[in-house]
Length: 565
Image: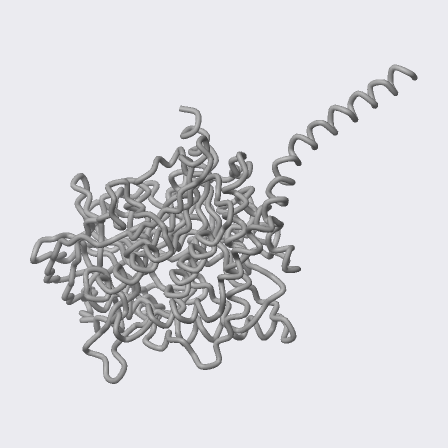
């Protein structure tokens, strides 16, 4: 009996030591988010400051901030002058404020048609289909390519799922569905398959194009549906209207065609092949699904004009004070670019991008000011990285992540700010996109609690927001990354009001010329959220602990390999 009690006591002490050891770093972060120095410095983040930055960047003068235009020149000048005034250092070790990212811009003029033995459908480009090719040839054509419906276009060995099994799509054009296969078990989404309700990278359009290329397809056509895509087809119509950007890879020849069709086009295409689209879609989620050849062919003629130019990642550095820790870095990221302007539009032609993403860029500038007001500095160094060409597929962030100015193995964390979203007042909550992925959530929880805020996960994980912003380029390389969105539980107005305002933006303003500062914008919540994110970065900058990925997260192994080569 006594031996048993001794065992219990010893076990208890052992467990207590473990919890104490685990808890100490977290307590340290909690201490730092309450630092008097940080609380004093954050007062410089005001509604007036945010309004100034956002209204400047989103003004007509900046012409929608498309890379490689006068809008980029004005944006680069405004950011560098601001950072220089704050006393920050140029972030590039070569002594400049910019990292040159070489881009290729393509304008594709397309004609496309679906053909069967009985019918030839010459589509209305922009209404019935959108797309392009990043091949730099002046003429890029596909003639009478067979069409194959490949379900969700996923090859995921870890889930035992392969939509390309027993089918050869080389030289063919594949038609695929957006999102992951929603596998249902016992009437519920199966969490063991593709993240259940939460989208994995397999669900992203960029993956569909990449996998089609790996399979040797001549083209990839993604079927757009608003709910799984997370945005209406008009977003794609606007996005494909004009120049498309890419980072060229000399070892890869791009697809001759990549694009989207709306639901109505998909329904008609399948009907031309004597099939029902919705029946085939339902079959595509059944394990063992086999690709289906359509009784139709695809022809496209494309004239491409290409240009190569350098676009700018704008980098400012707040240097750390600790001799040992100052060569470790926390990066605040936001993308400065938007969609530019379309001279073919009647009336307003400028995509001002006030929320997306002048608000994010303005916020990291405001956070930079708070760091510059610290009395005792930060032990670690802080980088403020405004990246280019996010709207073209996270290109600026991707460029930095594979050509880092500072080693990724010395990069402690990334804090990403993309469309702050909260322009309708203070909220009781904060949304964490990808909540549970890393210990950064705990630091954020401590900082948010100071303002009596609670954290909630993304309410729409099926839309894959975690894979749609700049932090993802760093996460893919293994660097823990935090991505926060404004909350929904609006003080005095409730959650329903918050949902209403978010939906209004998505449905009416997202990627349209109406994304401008509105007269009723309330920056009080934006200020509060910006101050929280400042305190998060400050806490990580003061603590010698490195936040880790959570167990089971797909990025954990990459980080461990990076830090323990």
